[in-house]
Image (cartoon, rainbow, N blue to C red):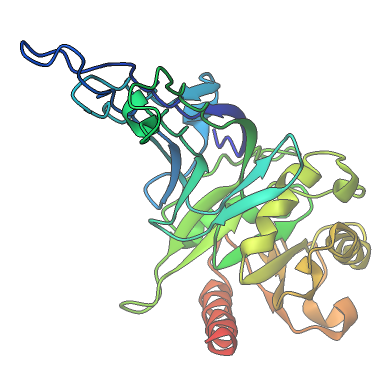
Length: 329
């Protein structure tokens, strides 16, 4: 199961307290102050990794605390700093501060790091407060508290192409045919309950990643069905493939429903380059490309069952992805 939203609390370590100490030697009965500083508290660090694909690890554990700094010691010895805690999360995760609603960072690259909670500074020992007029200060500082906040982790899958369609439009069957992914397939609505990624081989070194997204229904952008929970994954795809079932009672209406939901969701997803595919041509009971207009868009006819048009569709997807990449270089 893909867990793509998680809420956790992170607590950086508090700084260690400064030390109150004076030199005590055999022939120096009134030695000066030698209390050391406290160590810095550990921080909480987030690191994006392409080896992670879900936020499942954060489903049950909700509190992550770094180690506090150790207290200062005599002989001007500084306390040891607290150990940082490093949390590995999937590439494409957006971090939001739930207290302020502010988006803190978008970890959209492998290896990208972000210190989400900074450890507290260690307190100063009394040796720090010695002056010409106060040679035996009886003053020290307590360590500062580390940052603590509750954050939301929101994963937005990064894929080259996203398959978009109404329930049972044939998205999962298509992905299982052109890639090694094995999404759940069925003849009832909402078979796909979470996005699935598949690597589509193309030539020797031009493979690309395709995401099978749960079916959209009218009102998806308002949260109906599984809509708004998964529309966010479309934000990061380079291109879209709109799948329309050729056996739908009115494919034109299905096509307009998809466009309306994309436009209503916003974030520019309706403006992404796209391909329109008419599916299930093997059934023979549906419409053909010459029977529909789909706003004047080019249409490719496919059948995942027989393989009809799949090589053409893969070529169109690869070419469109290359065009987008060329524009962003």
